[in-house]
Amino acid sequence: MNIRIVPNNKLHVSEPNPMWFGNGPNEENNPHWTNKNWLQSRFHFSFAEYNNRANSDFGVLRVMNDDLVQPARGFGTHPHRNMEIITYIVHGELTHADSMGSNESLGRGSMQFMTAGQGVSHSEQNASPTKPLRFIQTWIVPTKAGLTPNYGSCSGKMEPNVVKHLVSSTDDADSKTPVKIHQDVNAHAAELELGQSVSIDIPEGRQAYLLCIEGGLTINNGQAQLSKYDACEITQTGGAPLQIQASNVEETEHGQLAHFLMFSMAERSGSGRRDL
Image 1 (cartoon, one colour):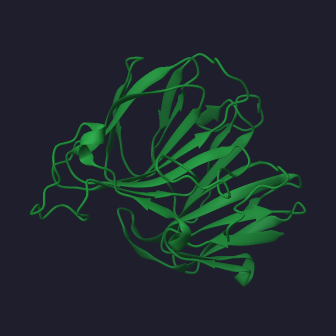
Image 2 (cartoon, rainbow, N blue to C red):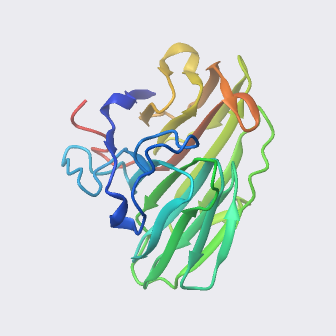
């Protein structure tokens, strides 16, 4: 199994002008803000002003943005087409509204998904006046263009030290996941107590991208060490299971934990960053 670390200092950090997304000026003296700009986004792949041909995707995984949104700020209504969009909430509460009539708020560990297909508009807001919001938004290339738009979500109830299988393909009848998308992709997440470990099978012919959301992780008994915001590319698995252990924990909304999110997909030759 080949594991290559993507250190967080290799991620592009974007802090866009608040007016671009319909927000007012940044609040310099608000004690509830944890960042000077309304949004701090870590881009794992080329996106917006970050144009890097050596880091455009990982298989069908086209976008992974790790977003921190300050209180009473968010993304105003904007359109998408022909993409499977998955959003995983880390802390705070995300309020969603879209042109299909969907409207809801979701908290930690919850996941929302959209098939943008023929076209959909949506907004994503942090409506809390006091609590920052962090979420991971992922875009996955669908199996075909022109799909019927769709929206759904699942709750964030998680058991510590237990892997939650969140996402699978609409063509995969054997996997009973709460989220189904139009692509051969699986997503798993877990919260781990210090020293606890879990195992996830990655069959031969598949690859994975794992993000350390909180705390620290030891992968495959020391083959790789990840800190908060680090990721790793996992290829040439040989069908071996991936071992993930919590080497460091931090205070979260669910207690002292490490936390990860992993997407796996069909292996594609040449996947991965070419600038590490």
